[in-house]
Length: 281
Image 1 (spheres, rainbow, N blue to C red):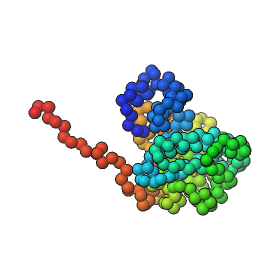
Image 2 (image 1 turned 180 degrees about the vertical axis):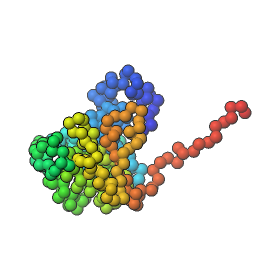
Image 3 (image 1 turned 180 degrees about the horizontal axis):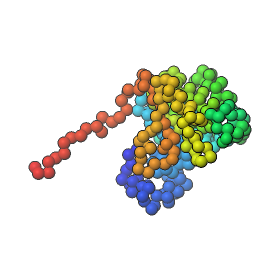
Image 4 (image 1 turned 90 degrees about the vertical axis):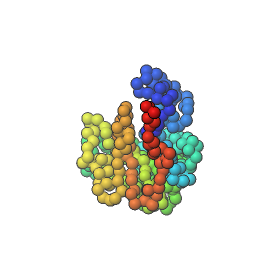
């Protein structure tokens, strides 16, 4: 994820017997910077925190002054409330404005369209929203309510969002995820050249048996097959020494034709390998 300090490695290592106690204490008292708590895993939804933080970090390196982060599938709203909180913390820490948008149809899941929506696992009416209660909890996040296939058509014109940096997908169905993925194809002024994306319903367990030929994974596969933009696993996460399950749910969206895609964001002084001194001289 990020290069940790010696103290972080010592205290926060998965091998350290102190690690569970450190995590519990840091989460309870919100000690340290957002980045430190993210590295430690002391966030309630670390996958949300990861996407928000690194999207903002990339935007800062590219000299954007603001970004948007989006959740598709708000349901009761717990995720959106946390997303708004993380956005505020990251904005203050990195020094960039972050707008938050939540898409939902309010009434819960519609009836499954066909086998691709996994009707053996999902039913119409799941995840209904109490809109009034949620509006009382959020402060700055904006709700975009209605069928996502319809609301996306006017989203940019209506809300004039800052360029998108992260998108969190939790729509459950193939038939809902497929149109929601089209936001990634918006004109390049509406997006960073690389986006952080989280997909909720792609692992599961024995009941779900998520696979590449139905559900969210099918929608992702079809997206990749349909154009030059590509969703890719984040291999720096999945090959970590101690990978978390959510590491396998983070994908990066690459728009190779984006006008800013090739802008240098690495460190000049970190890519030199001078010859080591000869110990015999």
